[in-house]
Amino acid sequence: MAKQITKNPLTISPEKAADLLGVAPGVVRQMLYKNELPGIHLGKRWLIPVKSLENWIDAQLEHVSNS
Image (tube, rainbow, N blue to C red):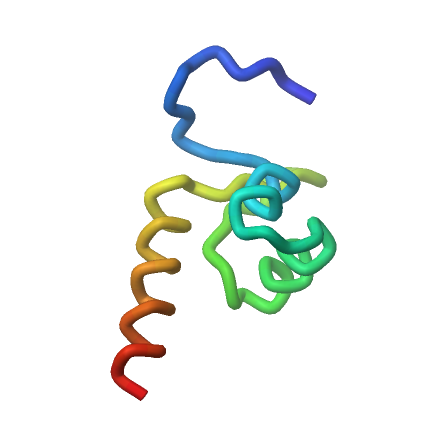
């Protein structure tokens, strides 16, 4: 795995996203494959843009509050 060189990376791994979301990495990967979570498939790796993940979380919160 590549070494993180910035304090605020533009993208994170599915494992890091899973840790931040409090779910298993497999759940994040399934969501990526189903296009339920924003991500970039680069070769065999998935990268999740941090801003896209934050926007996705905000959208999920809006959806819940509007229900």
